[in-house]
Image (cartoon, rainbow, N blue to C red; front, side):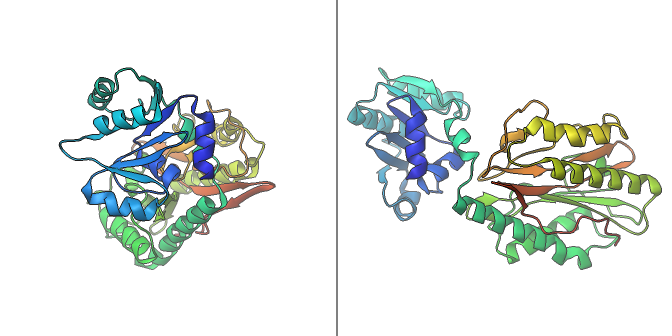
Length: 351
Ligand SMILES: [Mn+2]
């Protein structure tokens, strides 16, 4: 109710239609398909037969309007807009397909459709206590899964094998599913920040980067750890140490009152002095109901961090033909610092 009130205060329109699943869940608690219609006095979930009962259970204060093939969403939206007396309505033009938008425009003649302008996303940046407890649990599951599978990781297994171990373990620990496509990148594949796990057989002397997360009550976590198989070369160890130290420096720099771009700069300067151009992505991002949320911990995001912001800190070094390394934690800003939600170890583990 607080979230919906805050949303309506910022709306600056008579009504809104919400289609993005994370925004639907954030504002209503409903986690199925469909969309929301919201005005000052009305809150309605539009969905089809498959989700009507679920909507009633998850969002008991909301009216449920059932869509059918004869009476589709845009038509019901028109009726609801008329009932609310709405002359202007915000819609998620950054999410709807062109066809979706045309269908709404044709149905809602006389109603001015305006872009949503990121209003729900801006509200979602600052997590409340309930959201933070969910993210902490999703983080605990991911950290523990990493610790639990370490004895099962060995040279001779494939990247896909490693991914299966992680995802299975997270499910067993209570995850509702992977937070995103698990990354497992060994050897020269490690230079691809978003490598897709392959049948590559992990060999002695290689680094393996695992980037994964768990889901708890819809909320996600994001962690990366890099481990070594057998003795690694001084070159790979130096890469690992650089990333490890850059991440530590960034954690020392982060906190409430700090600008995202300044935290990014700390890790970037450290890595660029040793491996120029090898850290080509931003330092981190917000995490919540969606894996990449605002704010961005990047050179061009001057957001001042505040209590309730949840962001990742994930520097990396990527060298084509050699390999790569990334180390990532999910951290929660508090009034006097931050809580690192990840308890998995970060020293170089040699398996
Ligand atoms: Mn991440």
